[in-house]
Image 1 (cartoon, helix red, strand yellow):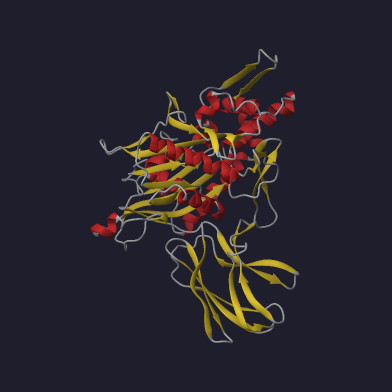
Image 2 (image 1 turned 180 degrees about the vertical axis):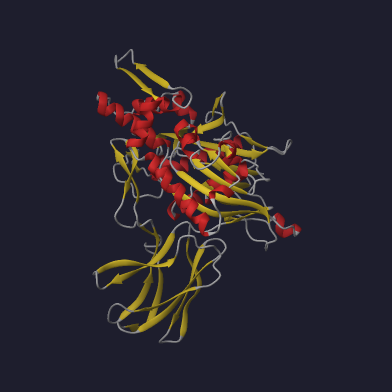
Length: 530
């Protein structure tokens, strides 16, 4: 049986296919999930580290039940998903003689979820994980490494908005635009659902695969979810919480603590249901008291002041431009699907109506559509996707006297690639004994997002000016090295390199020595791309 996990910045959802009803259901896990009348069972993505040496943690709703999220303790972590795979600026604590990383906190959190599912007890022979569109390979690789330690036979990944399209079950609507706006990311994806006569291929992004798939065994042709366009931004509800807190801090000199951040979050949630809201706190031991009041108009001013709607418009235009290049106009999109907690903000729902008629907009499953849709990534569904990021190899730029990056894969490249990418390289120094091939993910040249600490808050900010690059294999033992015998010299072409992308997103490389007339590397996988 498959278990789907939508690991979110603010909340995490776990779902399975009910064997009796054959319908997807969201799981309630004791101690982890919170059950509210208006929402399905959600697991707050919170961790309190009791013992870092052994990995003993308290997670989910239990953190709030014990008040561990309000003390400002270094052992408490929220929004830790945003730090995974990034070069975070700021301080992470050392606990119990161990240096803490966001990757370790995330690993403990997901491991406890899997252990809780098994304790229900439910089988976990197949696991499906959802990932943001804008996530770089470091995050996907981390997720894969966590799964390797979980003793799960089959593990697959699927983009969150693609899963959301499936989760709404709109089989009769061919062209769907998904706006997935959660606690940490804004993801948009244009997906076409259809039945296609295609070659049978592995489904989704497979990390581990045990037995043959249903399609391979039965010979049936899979249904296809074809991703036509997508865009992502590192923006979410956690940013809005911080903006609200900053507003009260600047206006009323309110201290920025875990407690006041929680109050800001509760204000934001309340303003989705009513036009004004207040939060009051009083500690009868310390006599500290806070009273926060905010109305919806001022809240929306805070969003505008932060460029919130400009960011939403930029992401939407990116997706619609990709669609137009394929001859698809916005008017041809059958449904716009809103998922994630942040889409419940009335201003976000008003914003989407600038692009689509109200009759086309669906927002009735904001929390569980992704996890439930991921369950449909079975052997009868094929995901046809493309690479969101571009990639390049590092070279020495003599003119600038520094390393630079030569693009080899453009954003939007379908995989597997139909034609190899060829480069001819020479040595950069006399008697050069080898050539290293360092591959990097190339970010948006117009700017990006960096994650950093503001006190004990993990926040993001937009940066611009230069393209961001994330080296993928620039570490000992991971570089692809072509040994040169005899050694190379500048001024002559020495090796021919051919790159191709296989069906599981591996970038594979073949290297031929033009002087020695021999193949040095034959179709070797270098890195998995995103």
